[in-house]
Length: 346
Image (cartoon, rainbow, N blue to C red; front, side):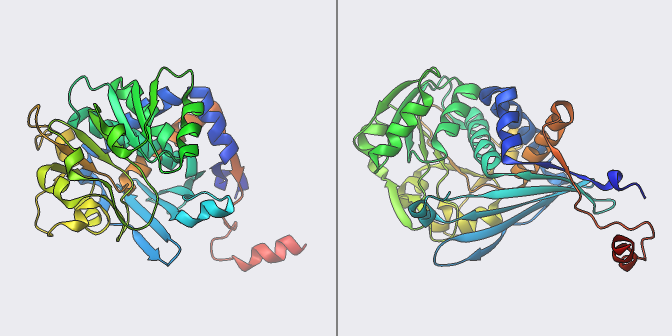
């Protein structure tokens, strides 16, 4: 058998960086949101399951699978907040697409960068359906690795161009200001959460500490605000006071996962929430009126990763930004796997 037929395209970190720059960060986010939206519109076609998580005192390692009738995808991802003390990333990831008919891999890709991009694209996509029309000002509470991606996604998809930043570490906010310089934002660095949310129509919370936390208290959330809750993404990790949840219309990706990992882990299991795909397809209403408080309780779901990998796979075919990996042991005679060793010895 021709070995070249069984090579697997691999997108390295270097390839991903070059791909994002070749397309442009904002066009990449817009196109990626389009792929996520398309897959949410066919939500019921997917074989779905909550991610499989291995928790430890230091963090969590997870597998996130999703499949339709043609392609299977999964992501390996970790979350270790203490990694930053050693100069490591809090989150790292890689992902795979495979052919359902044969089980053979179709793509292996880095997903540390891609996860940040897909998280931001999904946040902005949800806000397009849930945020107040014409919203221009967003507060970002937590200015770490995800903050710039969120800002650019909301600008690209909704036209948000005024940012109010806050982080307990001022250096993180200063980093964010430097990175977004010249990208069309009016940026204010706030001295407190209260100051950051003042006048903001959208509030994004994206902190990293693995604990029950109250980043946003009930008195800071007025009528008409959209909350993009990104940081609460595992059992025992939240960002919002429970009273905010009780006043909000809550939207999630996949109820069985979010009940365990999201902000709604603070609520009774029968508290009503709406899955985002229902709003996108018109099966359920989104924002009910100008005074409604909407919350996208986002923990990240495998269908989003599936869509992101689909997008990358389509782009590398035209850009050539990948390399082939000799990943599959595939002998000339399927029953003679040991013969490969003998032929290699000769």
